[in-house]
Image (cartoon, rainbow, N blue to C red):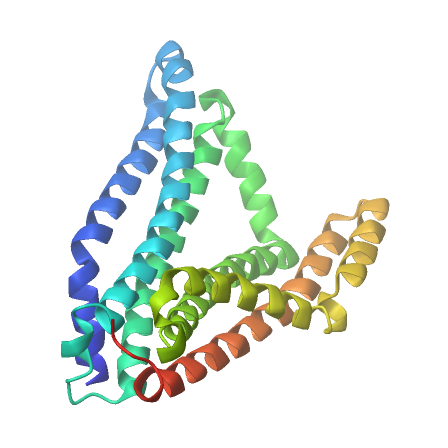
Length: 267
């Protein structure tokens, strides 16, 4: 049943994300291909295309988060909820199936945002400097420390987005507890920001993630102006952060599963 739930969620969201992905790819492709235009056309079109790519990144992220929240709210606690909770599906399969579908769309959004970021960077380089640009990229990518740091940054950003989905699920579920369901929209926002704030304070207790430690480490690195040391410092922050993100996401989903069937009510 897990597979059926995931398949249904993917099908329900395919049109929206398909159109959004097509538009994002169009902007990215146009920005890259603009480099083949004449010098005058390039100078005129590049700022507009780069702006479109930047707006597309913001829209993709906001669209993903808002649509994910609204989809979960509608399918679980709106009119569809009566059908959803009547299905012979356990709360574990129900929540994890929906989350897996959202996670897949989230990964796609992250990949698209990465492509758009590359398009912005590449599109901003003068065509005459193309060889120098790729030479510098090749040098940077050849350094193990830089390569592993960039991969870790990408993974950390993706995990953070997926953790946000887990917080959204939990916040909406908490907002539909019987004694607060009348104000569920407002309470969902309160729970979302409250959980995010509380997690930030808890993460401060981890030495390698405390604000003081990060500030001291980054200050020392910047004073030495050592690029390898800089990325080493980045990895020292991001690795424990990525691990804690995965752990907290599992905790949020576990609490959501526990509450979903037994303690929440449909509108």
